[in-house]
Image (cartoon, rainbow, N blue to C red; front, side):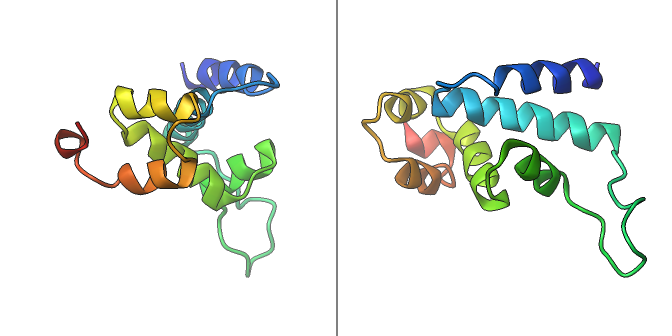
Length: 108
């Protein structure tokens, strides 16, 4: 149930010390659930405004930029070994994001 996923993710991302991988998968789960729910964010906006994207809504909720939310979600495309290196601060976050665009078979 998407409402349960959103509630669970909201509770989990309130923790102070989240690993980058935990944040990445939490953001991805919540974005996917929000997209499936088809949350209308444009109903209270003026006629000339555009509909907010799910990642924009999430970025406002978690206090990070939309680009940063997208970077975290990109980490979910890493193979587990590389994601572990990010969590252990042995692989720089921005480098890991760049690597995430490489096919998983090549990452290994």
